[in-house]
Image: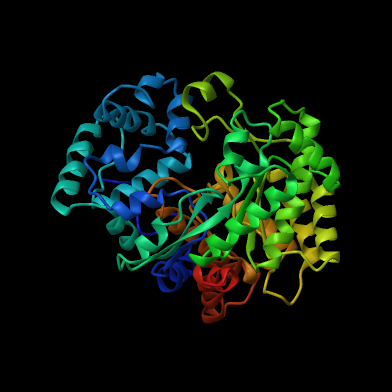
Length: 458
């Protein structure tokens, strides 16, 4: 029997009442994820639990590597069953890791199985889940609708095929799939395949050509419903002059490599250009900072990007973030912005900075995004809430997302909701805030769903 009980993460009666009365049944708006939209369109039944649970999920891969598992049993040639059994063995002693919680909840919510996950039960769980998949014809549509998702924003590169999104809309699903615009592959000028990415946009000979191509593609995204864009940087760089960025771009287009400093010059200018563009079209901007990517060159060459070899960066870019926001604000070109910070040491610095650029354009125009990636665990979420309430306004917060490639990740929203309700419940019972349950419940529901819907304009 699973150790997950109804009062999981809820340590008092007030927290339980807030969760079960106000939070539990709220819909989910997943405004940032990496689900493959073509898989949602095709909507094919899954063959086994591995395909749903482990394929493409680098969170789980990292956990297995930390336990010393051979890569063949993670991303290699071992069978799906061998990989699944190995994950169950590893998870059985991963006490305190969020996957230890999430996986058990996913098993219960999606497969109606409350068997505790460990090596001893692995075969039984494998058979149980596969039989459940066979009997119920589990598809992406069923998993998303079962999770009570109304909207999800996929993350799509600037040159991605957008025909999938009208095709999904024509299917009549109970949820909407909308692409968020992302220009990272055009931003990362140092990348080996950079010129190939640029050429997907057509004839681009100059930086002005690139700017025009980016705007044209953004307009195409907007036609299929886009209201948000994503910018991912290890750190924010100084805003450079266009002429300097133009020289770097010309050098790279000529097939020459660029230096680290030249890369930063280009990224500093293009970040500024993108933010101005998003403000022009009323696009909410999700700025992700603090990830040091592709640390392991050998595994990058073997497996490619986004396979579990990123980490938290140390650089402090708060000064340049300030200068970026200030210049955009002075030019009336600062879009609604959600700042996702991966380095918890920077919570207070970034939280207090964004408070300098609020306006009546939106409730919480400048948002401190939810605990993200390495921080979307109990410790990270609790610290995030503490810092947000101490220096910002919790009532304006747009709430949780999945940031995941797994269709089973939606219980993370309930994980966050339990932690949120427990945070409020403890303060209520300690006499640190109002005991007006309906007022607090309304704030809980806003954070769970309504604030994001309003903020992102869907």
